[in-house]
Image 1: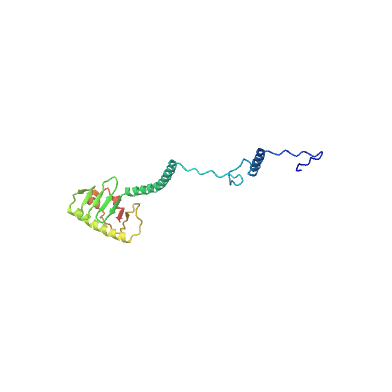
Image 2 (image 1 turned 60 degrees about the vertical axis):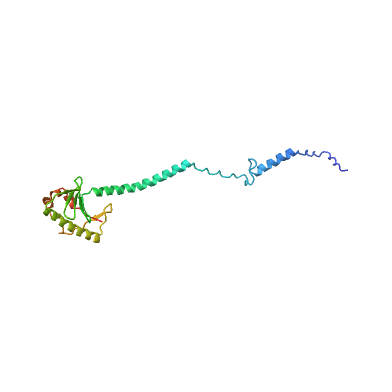
Amino acid sequence: AGASPPPEAGAPAPPPESTPRERRARSDIGDAQKGGGGGRGPPGGGGGKTAPPPAVPLHPAMNKLLLSLLLACIAAVAGCGDREQYTAHRAERSKPKMEVGANMVSVRRAPYPNLDILPDGRLRVDDIEIPLDEAQRALLRTSFVKLQILRQNTLTESTAPADASGRTIPLDVPAGEAPFPPDLAERIPEFKQYGEALANPRALR
């Protein structure tokens, strides 16, 4: 009782039972085929999808190098503007001109020395006072007063643009109100080489 019935004549023999090792091998093969081939993936791998590689942080020395390059580029761009401004400033300073300030009138023409006219009519050449007679000092005193009036009118009314340095604007000299007599260089020889500077008066702000 309980014994299997004998196989019928001519029927194929049943396959032999598999061992536990064979069953585990077949299970592993099935799992690999379901996961996309390539063996068992990590748990939760989503059907064999590979995770992106982790980001590699830059070395501190590389960070410093990139920062240095960035700062150098910024400095180069700023330097271009500074160089242009400096060139314009140098060109403006080299022009012959007469600058009329509140306490002094400066006459400049390279390569000659600077002339400074003081309110009391004294004249200095490169900070060295030149001896003048009373008529010459009276002439310069009168010219200094005229220049101060023209300067105040210019600063109040003029809309002319300033120079590259922003320090001076063209001095407005109405026709017939020249601050110096036409024979200035004959009466005071120190002004002989400064005609071009006297023709470019500027009002100091």
